[in-house]
Length: 306
Image 1 (cartoon, rainbow, N blue to C red):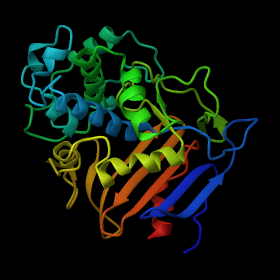
Image 2 (cartoon, rainbow, N blue to C red; image 1 turned 30 degrees about the vertical axis):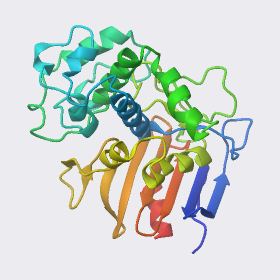
Image 3 (cartoon, rainbow, N blue to C red; image 1 turned 180 degrees about the vertical axis):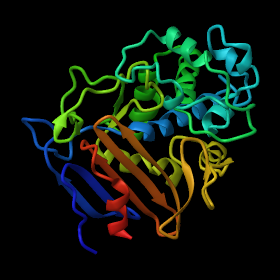
Image 4 (tube, one colour; image 1 turned 90 degrees about the vertical axis):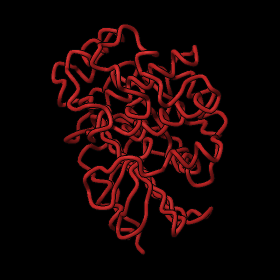
C-alpha cells in the first residue's frame, strides 16, 4: 500500500492502536507549513461532538431525547411543536439545510435569536419523523439546547466535558482569533474567509481539531469512551435511512458500507476546508483526512487506501 498523495493537510490511518500511515503536507498559511500540531476546521464532523454533548446531558437527566425542542429554545414557532432532539440528531425533523436558507450569510456574524427566527421563517419540509433531509440548522438548534440545559456556553461545554476528558488538547470550538497553529482555508490557491463558527455554524460545523485528536475522537464509538454503554450504542445505531443503499444516519454519524466494508463515518466541507473521519469496525481501522484546500477530495484519498 503506497502513501496517498496529499497536497495540503494531514492523513492518518490506524489499525487497532498502530498508526500505519501518517502524511502531513503543504502550507497551513502563507508563513507556516502544516505540522502534527496544525488545527483544521472539521466542518460537519463537528455534528458528532454536538450529538455526544446531547447524550451526556441526557445521561444526567438534564434533558430528554424526546423533549419538545421548544423547551430549550426561546419563542419556538408552532410548526416546531412535534420536533424533538432525536429528530434533530437524525435529520428527521423536517428542517432545511443551508440551501433552503439562501438569506443566511455563512460568514456571518449573526445575532443568535435572529438566526433562529430565520430558521423559523421556513415551514418544515415534512412532519417530524416522516422523512430524512440533512440539516445543519437542526444541529445549530441542538447546540442552543445544550447551552440552555447545561447553563454554559456551548464551546465551554465541549472544552470541559468532551475535549478535556478525552485528552484532545489541540481541539476547540468556535472562532480561531488569538489561537496558534490554525490552518487558513484555501480555494483556488488563495486564502478564503472563514465561516462564522461562533453562531451560524455552532454545533453544525464549528470544531477545530488536529489529525491526532480526530483519530482519538473515533475511540468514542470504537471503545465506548466518554459515554455509558447505552448512549454509546445509540450514537451509531442506524436510526434513519438516508436513501442510499444500505446507509442510515445515527447521531452525528453515517452508518453503512464504504468500499464494501462496514463503517461509521462523516465528511465535512466548510469554505476552504474538507475533512473525513471513519471507523471500520470489522478491520478496526480508523481513517482521518483533514485539509485546508477546497479542491482536495477526501474520498479519492480514501480510495487509494482500499
